[in-house]
Image (cartoon, rainbow, N blue to C red; front, side, top):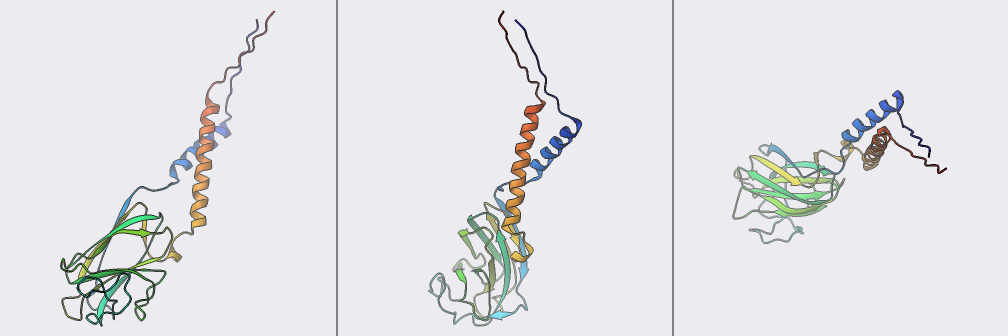
Length: 216
């Protein structure tokens, strides 16, 4: 009976590639965990618009279908944002005034405030805490969160803080400043390849014993 033992070795070049692949695979961020983003602003001396009617005190519909007769010239703050994961998100707003919020998709035009409006929230009678719970947002879709006031008095503007929480990353800004989905997909695919190659390297680094048995 004969016994043959073979060992598998990696060259210095292959070891370097394996090491780099392992680092790359760790650096690529695959589907993210839940995240939270907060920002603050102030509507004092901000531009004004005739806001849409809301469900609360005004008894409107949601999404709004008509303009408010109370808030015909209310200051507003429009914040564009994008999420990278489709799912349900919460928006918690805290205002030191009679605050109301609206969510728009694609664009926000204060001269045509009923265009692209998805939802409105008047927290009446719990003033100062307007927001949304369980908003279904689509990945890479452009949204605008508009914070404004109830009426034309000095009780309807001031400082505020909005907090957005959900299953994916939230990025403030318009999509022109955000990587295209194809670029993100390319990075993810490369990360998967690097991870796979790294695993193969680990397997090759193990000693391989091949036993050939020959009977006399």
